[in-house]
Length: 256
Image (cartoon, rainbow, N blue to C red; front, side):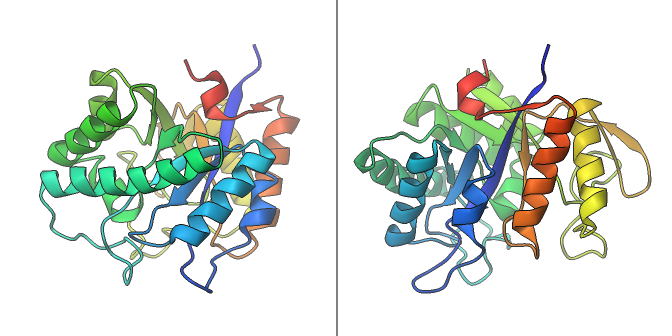
């Protein structure tokens, strides 16, 4: 049976006249998009432009909520309560949902950003807050997460879960990501990223930074659009997967 995989990137991460990355070019390679909802990046105009571009290309629209941290790009722990996390996710999802409805589409998945995304993998209260918000917003929503607390909480709530494999980030031996503040957290060698991604998808294994093989059963591969050469890298990853017979398709079209 042909292996299927979704390709997703974080998009709409600009503010006002400033833009991060070439979203238009990246959208020609992707099958899904995590769209910033205003708390770490993005604004109403950028969200509208990004959703409209996704609709034109048939790319799945996903919400990318974060801590309220524009200055820190959502990468700082804001010390919020679980209730604050829940209401912040509701607020951001609601904004994107309205823009998606105006453009004739729906939000099909939710993927927490940055430090929130890291913490929901290990904090049960945060994970349950996000899963509860997602369940009440849309019972057919897909929650994108790494293996951990959020994936468990979302499954317990009856939600579909898409496990994320990250193409250009180093992993610890326990399967968590190396903190961005540490050397080697982000991998820059394009050939190495392509090799690691193909092995992750085809063989279900990725090596930690210490060389330990870690089982990975990913449904979607996250490509970072803000890294140098992101477009060529995304094309290389897609070509490498397709050369191994992997079908690239939007998660919402096939995840059961």
